[in-house]
Length: 219
Image: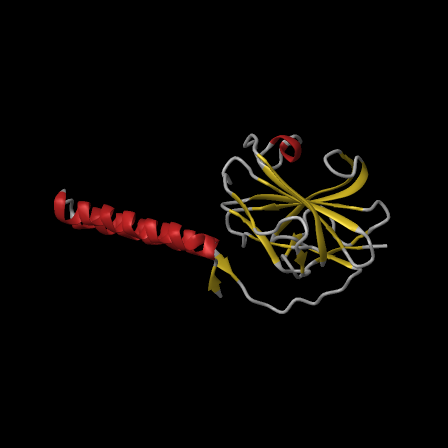
């Protein structure tokens, strides 16, 4: 298990702040030992929670041009045919994966190919399961065309807690299936839009592993 680069600054600042809090309680305010020890215990637990959030596991990725891999760890919350209005302007099959604060938050490309479209949108911070979060929240939309000419759109969506989306690709880049394309800090969701004739391999409520779970098969 390694630490993701997005967490290093946050973890360093948290360590300084938590150490300062304990120092003030122990040596400046001079609180009873039971209180300062209790606070220390809570600070350690909170720090470990932040630490686990920024974990970045390493594993072997089995690539397949026909497969669509989960872009994130989480739970499938939406499977439906819907009108995609930003890029395709036609009906697509949508799969949405909700990431809780305890999930790994590395975002991985569902398919290999060339980035045909990449756009960031500032927006609101509605809760991730709100019906309008996909079109009104802060988000980044990316479209990748695979070797067979099939285009897959995936969208990072910020939520009420997640207020920082990071992405590492731009139009024209070549991405590998399962390769890291971004990160969402402290939970939210990722939507994937597929051709209507794609075969869906997951159900509502299923747990996914980014870069490992095959959520669909392309025609």
